[in-house]
Image (tube, rainbow, N blue to C red):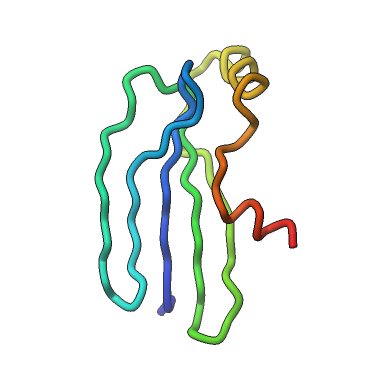
Length: 95
């Protein structure tokens, strides 16, 4: 059993990256914040923060879970707003 697993959704839209729903189970808290996906999203990424045990280092990773078929639109918006959202896990992954 995982000690902690949290998931933050991010959606890429014509206005930039938008934070979506959050699901977490730190110490069994079951914290959840449901936010509907924007109608104009072109890409959705789930960003995970997992800890297998109390004394282990966090494991940060992400997964594309939804995208439109037109990759050129996605690429253009990523050029304008960044390839990935401003999520703390990306900063931690680089260390």
